[in-house]
Image (cartoon, rainbow, N blue to C red; front, side, top):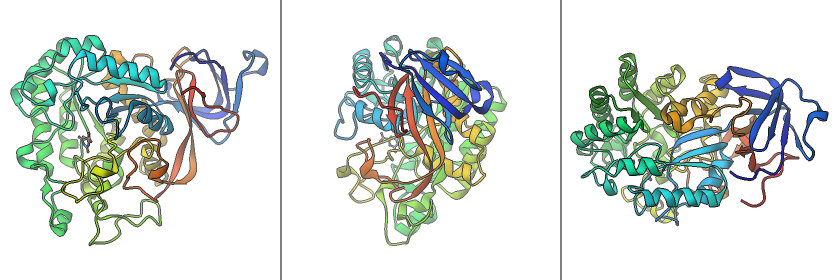
Length: 460
Ligand code: DOR
C-alpha cells in the first residue's frame, strides 16, 4: 500500500460510485496513491509524465470492494492461508480492504498478535488489512479479552467468529465495553445446544443424507438475544453471516426500532442452497445439484447452506438494505481437512476469488441491480467500520486510490487450482461465472491486473 510509483489514467470507463450517486462514462486519474481527478474527459496535456493510460472501454470502475469478514489464518495456520496469499486472493477478487478474523493460533486476543498481523500485512504490501480482535480470551467464551488494549493496537471490532459468544452475560458486558470504545461486537450467532455442530441444514437434505441437521432456530434465537442486548446496552452489534429468513426478519424489526444493529450476508448463502452439499453439475452456470448418493465437502460451511426460501429472503434483505453488506467469510482450508468424511470435514469456503462473479449472476438474472451490488460491497461495510473506514469506499477526489475495474460480461470457469488462495476446494469448481474483476488498485498501487497496458507492481 506504499510508494505508488506511477500515475494511472483510466479512460472512458463506466464510473460507478454509490458514495456519490455516480454512474456515467468518464476518465479517472490516480496520482500519488489518491484519486486525483474524475471527469468526463481528462486531457493528455494535464497528465504527470509517465502516466500509464488504460483503455477502460467496456469496463466498470468502482471503489475497491471492502470485505468485513475473512480468515487469513496467520499466525498459526499458514498451511491453510497466509496474509500474503489471502491478500493476493483479495486483490484478484477486487477487494482492497479486508477485515481479518481472530481465530488464529495464538488467537488475536492481545496487542502483540494485532501488531504481528499488521506487520505481516505491511510486508505483503497488497491490500489494506483491518484486524478484528477477540471478544473473549482465546475465544474460549470464559473471560473478556483486553478489549481496550486491542482497540489501541488497531482492532476495528471484536468477534469470536467460528464460535458464538455463548454466555448472554459476557455478551452484555462485551457490548457495554465496546460501546465505550465506539467499536462493534461481531457475533457468530449459533446456539450450540441447538446446532450441536451439525454439518448441514436441518431438513430434506439432512434427512436424505442421514447427516445431523443444524436448524434455522439455532441462529435465530441468538440473533434475537443479541438484538435485545444491543437495545439494553446501546452497544453496536454486527451480525456475521446471517443465513435464514427468520434472521433477516429479526434484523428488519431491529432496524425499525432504530437499534444500532448491522448485518452481513455471504455470497454463498445468497447464491447457493443446501442441495449443493450433494455436489453439482458444472455444465451450466450455477446449474445446481447433481445427484443423490454423492456429497461435496467443499460446500460444508457454518452456518450451513440453507433453503431456496432462505436465500430469497437474504436477497430481498440485501436489495432493501436490511442486510448492509456482503462479506465473503473467506474460510480457506488445506485439502487434508476438507477431503475427508462429511462429518469430519472443516467448515468453510474460500470466497474471495468467486464472490463478485457469483453475485453478478444475480445481476444478470435481473434479481439485483448492479449499483446495489456495488453499494453493498463498498458503502455498506462502512456502516460497521465507522471512523475506522473514514475516506474508504469512494472515488471522490482526494480519497485513497482503491479502485477495482471489472468486466461485467466476461465469462470464466472457476478452477480452484488456479486460486491465489491456499484454499483450493470450492463448491463452484467448474462452474462458468459471468463478471470478473480484471484489475485492482489499492492505495494507488496495481495489485492485480489482467488489463493490457496496466502493469501490476512487481515487488509484491
Ligand atoms: O464456515 C466457517 N468457517 N464458518 C465460520 O464461522 C468459521 C470459518 C473458519 O474459520 O473456517
